[in-house]
Structure formats: C-alpha cells, structure tokens
Picture 1 (spheres, one colour):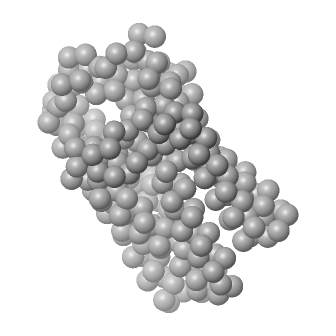
Picture 2 (cartoon, helix red, strand yellow):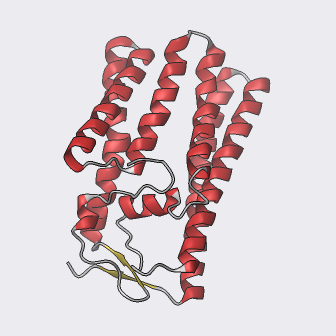
Length: 234
C-alpha cells in the first residue's frame, strides 16, 4: 500500500471475500473466525516474521545482524505482497519503513547514544506517517481498520465516521509525538538501562492508551450516529 495521500488501501483477501460493502447505516465485520484470521495474518507478516528474522540473525551474528535480518525479511515480504496482490498493507509498510530507519541507526556506529536514538526517531517517524494522512479523505486509521480487522463502511460514506477516523489518526500522531519527546528527554538525563526500560513502558502504555481512547471514541460515534455493526453473511 502506498502511504501517499489519496491512494486507495488494498484490503486483505479475507476482507475482500467477506461480501458486499456494508449496507445502509451498517458497518460490517467479517465473522469472528475470519476476523481473527485477517488480523492474525496482518500481525504475523508485519511483526511476527521480522521478529523471527531478528532472533535468527541475532543468534548467528549479534544485535546488528539481527536488525539486518529483520529488515531483509520485512522487505522480502513487501516484495511478495506487491507481486501477489499489487498492493502492500499499511501495517507491513509501516513496519518496513520503521525497521529500515532503526537498522540504519544501529549499524551506523557502535555509539550507545545512536543506538538509543532509534527509539524516539522511530516514534517520530510513526507520528509523521499518521499526521500526513489525517486531513486526507483516507486517514491511516481508516486504512488500518479496513486491512487489519476487515471493517467495511457504508458505501455512501458517513460524516461522523469520516470525522472519527481523521480525529483518531491525529490522536495516534499525538501519542507517537509525545512518546518521541518523552524518550528524547529521558536520553538526556537517564542512563541507557533506564531508557531501555522506559522505551518498553512508553511503547506499551502509549499503544494501550491509544487503543482504549480510540475504542471509546468509536463506540460514542456509533451511538450518536445511529450506526450499527453487523457480521458479514459469509
């Protein structure tokens, strides 16, 4: 998938096979087993495969080799996706871009400072990726919702949903910006071991907070707009 504003997201096969677009004032999700398959496949190719590549590379040649292996694996996956489906899912594209940035920083020098710099810069890159699509007709959160869980919106569109997806995209951009600023500040005053612990805490906490806020906001939009979610017939 291209991350350029105005590009059309490519739905995963499971979402494409779930039936017609949502009808009337309904949003449509695949049936639970298909939803789990769709989400699991997206997470496996964007997170699972790079982690497996990292572990294999690190076991053979250390941390730098692990980062290179993870980056190679994710770009090979991008290539396979591009050839097989003519499009690259958003999560996979994000994983490839962020991993490339991190790997370049890790192998550029043996400096501990540069190694730690990969974490705030990765968050900054995520902030930019979300922010640059927030004002477009296809904000990144809407694309990810279509790809990761197969959410299908009413074919005629809905102003309330459009506003939500734009706002949620800004929310995630803000979370990543705050994470980047916080980790950069921590690097200036804390030792490397503390920064690594903070990175884990900030990453997990930020994702959890963003997911909870997005979910509550989404439910509120559904109630205010009179929209309903139904499962696909097949």
